[in-house]
Image (tube, rainbow, N blue to C red):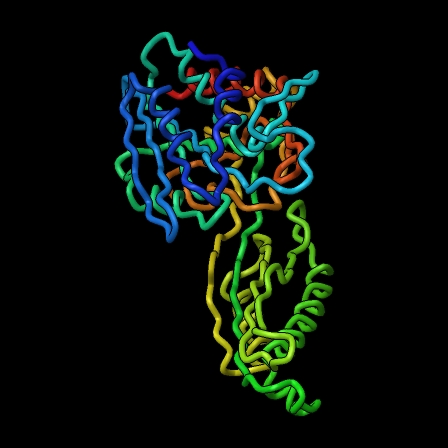
Length: 373
């Protein structure tokens, strides 16, 4: 039987950056779970295909299956790494490597927990390995389309890194692309009036100024542990040459939403800001994921809280400022974000995870499997 750390070593060694296909890591997982039912789903992207993998471990019953979810892709390698990101490096309690925390550690823990089974589980277990979570969420959306749990009542564990805390909610997320159009002409022929009227970048500049004002207003709002809503322009593209007034400029606005906000109202606010500057601007929603709040009265939460106290030594909870697949998979049933990983190391150079957390969560997942009856 392959141990959690051995699985993690193998996963880190496979390059599964979201800028390329994840077929190699899916092939490894297929081989790892070859004795069980495996289904691979191909998803077309513009430059390459990515793959989802579903593994089903049959139980004595199938009315309350337990689902473990983990994404197989990582963010791209950033400049500044002092170690080879694809060679696992052990130092003390730390294992370094790209994806070690986000989220190959979680995959290693629940995979090892399943492989340690010595008898048929009481309920079916599903392992959902999705692609493109760090990209456009194509894998998660594909699972929602293809996996049908309408005839049962699943419990869902998202094994994202939480420092072994139970995450009882997450903020929502909007990515909104705004495109301003103008008129291109030689920059020597411009004037303050012409720049304001025809320069798409000037329109984008004024839009960004209004977004800055909105950001300050949002910082005054509070929603308990979820904190304040946030907004930022995270991408901008425009202009064709240094001496040409730009005829087009696009921006992507990232908006983090707290549960007390209305998704439609959030979008309308940004749309109204853009349309006051140029009523002909084009608005495109690239992604929208609503906030998610865990039902702490659910059987899943109570069981995990009990396990956490026994194995981790506490039953502390936290809130995710980011967005995870819980926002999608909650439609199937009670859902909880609970996994190993040093959360502050997500998307950072020299990423590492904690061995103690890996060991603890492997035990925790094994205990949860035994309690899922």
